[in-house]
Image 1 (cartoon, rainbow, N blue to C red):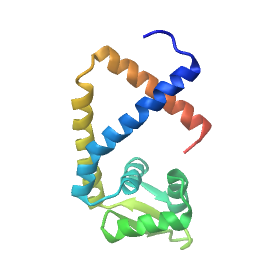
Image 2 (image 1 turned 90 degrees about the horizontal axis):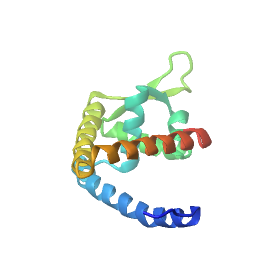
Image 3 (image 1 turned 180 degrees about the horizontal axis):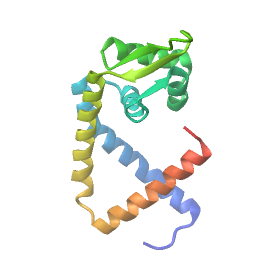
Image 4 (image 1 turned 60 degrees about the vertical axis):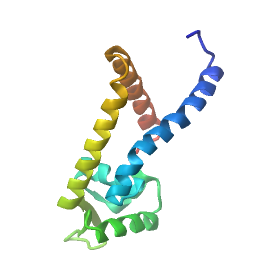
Length: 150
């Protein structure tokens, strides 16, 4: 591939990203429908899997939604048994959210499905290209985290 200017690179990325996003979304859609869960709920499950327990305000910040918006998402997840609210014993205004065993099992199933999907897709390219792709994605992740902390 010849050298691209920044504008040409941005244009090519603009062509590629929607195809990638659509393909990954399509691959995950069946699993999400099967589990009867939305993408925002999956993001919450991933966050809770990493953080174990978190305050509502931190979860809302991570998701980029208002506290009332986050309350609606969490309410459905509590209703469905994926997470629960834990009230701080010293200050009942502080509410923490944590995974239940059901939520933990769900995120493990989703992660296993995602892993298989990625193995299938990336198994078609060379080890060297996979390593380069991962290295670049990790750099992009660091840039995004440093510019817009989650």
